[in-house]
Length: 69
Image 1: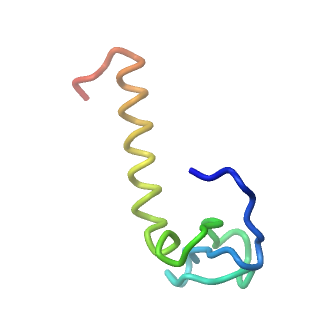
Image 2: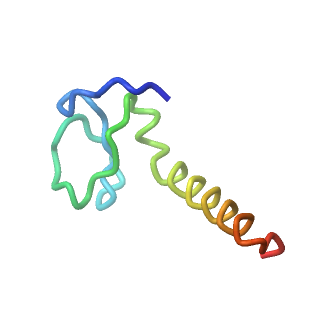
């Protein structure tokens, strides 16, 4: 993943209330996921978050020696 910072006004966000992609700060921070570099990344925000949560859960189970659950 690139580490360079994003300009918040040109970055894309996923609005969890409307399920729409927005560019820049259009809605309240409580309804925004992001920032994302592209519209396509923002469109996949929920799927990306779900996959990351699953990966973290799997890593936690492995760390705890509970790989069967």
